[in-house]
Image (tube, rainbow, N blue to C red; front, side, top):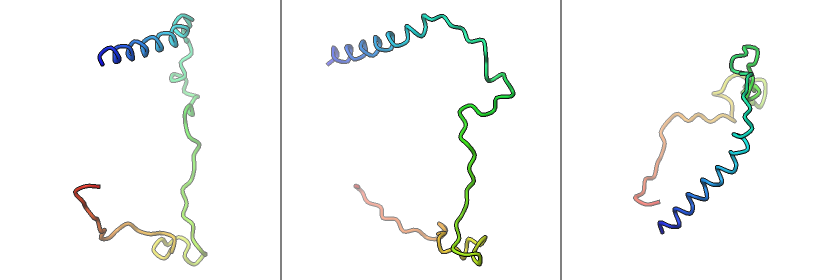
Length: 85
């Protein structure tokens, strides 16, 4: 059992080593640092989106209490607890 775990660890190490050797051996040094450039503001950023609520007609628009498509989560909840799932 110990030998199997040791083989797995060795395989993972060798895989990691062979994947990273070409990257490390290139010897490239990055001189451009995008975090120091104040004009870059949207790297790895989702595009903005607006949240909205739909209403069935203009009479109920803007009032969440009269909207039939909105269900408030306030109030008493019934929970059923069991010893086992």
